[in-house]
Structure formats: C-alpha cells, structure tokens
Length: 208
Image (tube, rainbow, N blue to C red; front, side, top):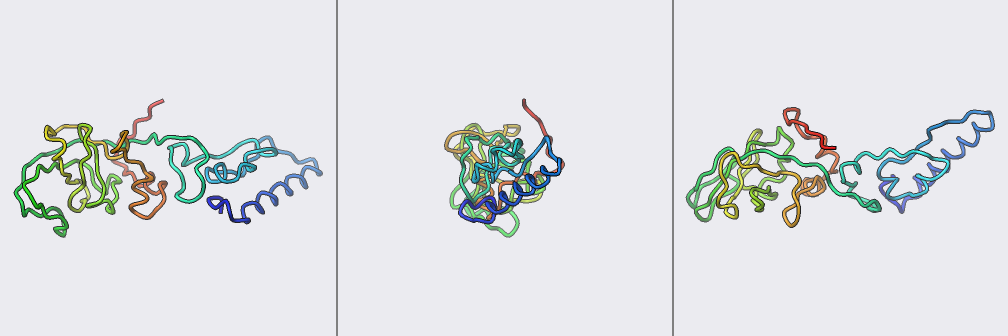
C-alpha cells in the first residue's frame, strides 16, 4: 500500500521490519544493505529511506514516471522516448472512413499520415481516436483504430509532413509532450504497464 500515504498498513510494515532488524542484531546478525522502499515509498513514506535503511529500490521513477496514486515528492522528468517514421501521406476526401471498424469518418478533405508503429510496438489500442503524436513539432491527432503495425494520424497541422519524417509517439516537449503517465491515464492503467508493453521489435537506444 505504499502508494497511499494515508494508509497505516505501510507504516506498520516499516515498524515490523525495523523490529526484526533490531531482534536479529541482538543475536549478532547485521546487514550491509538494508532496504524496504521502492518508488512509491520513496515518495510517500520518507522514513522508509532513513536509518536503519541505507538503500532504496527506485524503478518507475528512473523513467520519470509515477504511480497514478499518492504524492509525487521527487523532482523527476520523463526520459523515455518512443519514435517511428511516417510511411505514407495522402489527402483523403470527406466521408472517408479509417481503420478497422470504421471508427473515424473524415468530415472534410484531410491530409492523413500512416506511421510505422502499432499496438505490437506498444502503442495502446486505447488511444485510438484519443491520443496524438508529434510530427515536425506539430500535434497530430490519432484518427481511426490503431492496428498491429500501423497508426493513422491527421497531419493538417504539419502540412509539410512527408514519408520518412520522424514521429514522436512518446516524449517531446511543451504542449504536445506525451508521457507514459498520459497513456496510462487514457488506458486506465499504470505507467509501468505502458513501459513494459513496448514490443520486442522496438530497437532500444540507451543515452547516458
């Protein structure tokens, strides 16, 4: 329950663990590494990161994300970026329906880009007709149902968008910035599920 600072259960767990440490210490058993706090406890229970504890196990905070519940005491920024490329750009007439289930119908002639990423790459199906990506610095709404390998977006605000352009699905800055927390909120889940859902075919690049 470490995500809930108002719940006494975590305080009780901390007290029990400290009592065990004191008990075994009387028998001469001590430990160099003592830790109880993961990211939620670091944010919500500061004493879980104080003596006798000398380590913490931050996980989700390393990506700059948080549990959707509880406080956000740490000053961290999202560092994860998911990028792909534009595969195709077409101007489609009003009345055109897009994607499986025809969940989006164009009400005007629209420039539509197909981008090379879908739910097999970790883009949540839940952001169909709800999320956006960034192309040439412009916010481009997702239109139509996301498929396994591709996603269609409205590039009206990126009129010069062309095949090969970089697409920021997660990341960016300013108004259009997209974080795992944003996708998690739309999907009704935890940012960690979003991060763990990135497909195996997505190339990982680690920047020190």
